Length: 543
Ligand code: BES
Ligand code: MN
Ligand code: ZN
Image (cartoon, rainbow, N blue to C red; front, side, top):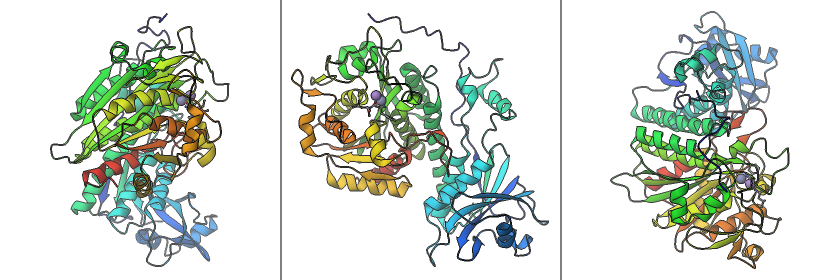
């Protein structure tokens, strides 16, 4: 029997979300790094053959140190290694009281310049180090628009902090979420993000520079929206809450949404989503969030795994494996963020996001190992392991997405621990039913600065998910578990549709310390890749 879904005694009644789009402001500055009023001026330092080397962009700062900034840094123990941060008091002649030197790694080969990812990471590390400050003047080696875009992205991504007041009911005294956040900023426990980034050497009157900054700002605000959703504890973000977030954002950005609640899911025969969600007091949802452009030539469907908490269900996860499972909706968060970003950027493409939202819990009403589900579209699946739930909700959503005959479907999911074992914590796996698309997705991810790797879908693994009682089983061979999951999903892709699957179980949630522009917790993995994919589709090029 299903229990009442509406009342959750653990949900604070004064629960209020912070404004997820509140982020660091970014401006292009024509002033010299020496003349900018800021809390700190950020310079780059590279690892030279004979010690640290001050990077281009910092000439005015070096001059204030009598041309001896590299020596001063070396004295302080700086080497220029990637990610290294050295703070020192500014020399007279500088308006900022502090110089923050951030390591860039090896000096690039002649004429190469620093690559985008190096700049992104350095800017991110600097922003993190300036958490809680008002303004940073970034005088990093920006040689062109791409360099400015990279520093902008990195600085904004690195500035992110999760507002913990989001987890304790927000403003207790009825103040707005924003003022609660400002109050929290004075609290030592929560410094809040660096408030303002000035890019020294940017060209504010140059259209291309302006466009790059606008793109970076919209992109990062949406990545930070995804991070906020991922970091929100599961008791404060159930499937209905997530759906409400999507509806609210859609309203703000002129997107169309459709939300299937448990009744509509039942009526539509969405046995995968219902089967996964039926153990929870918080019922599942399927959200369709669509952005359309009147001149679009391509239509992309993005499908996100949105398990707001993955306990494993009756095949319960042991302690040690469930503490971070609020992150199991990272795929849906990435899809949501991408659709909103595409709308804000006005991309000439149609993007349909499908958020497959459910909470995977054990209870008297939960799906049992051995149960057979009748999926959307009519296939049947024997659930051998209720912890292999992501593929079940995705299967329904992929089938539904395929009915609209998009040019391609890409699903994004924290799908398997096996992918984490294979590729580690920072790299996502790419699987497709089309070789050229696999290569494109990998290239696109590279372009976006996200580590990924193509993985195969060996046909011999298919028989492992045969079932004596259903069309398929939801689990097969343990070896190559990430590929087995991909092979399962492929069964639900309509004939003739190009399909890609991104298993982001590794990079979606950072359990160790922050690095570069990557915070602890939700990372927003895959958003940059998906936005880049949408941009390519807008150019008529889907690979
Ligand atoms: N959400 C997990 C996968 C996961 C693991 C995400 C670690 C992030 C970090 C998924 O639902 C799961 O439990 N997968 C099982 C599948 C198995 C039972 C076939 C796994 O990978 O162990
Ligand atoms: Mn699971
Ligand atoms: Zn899961």
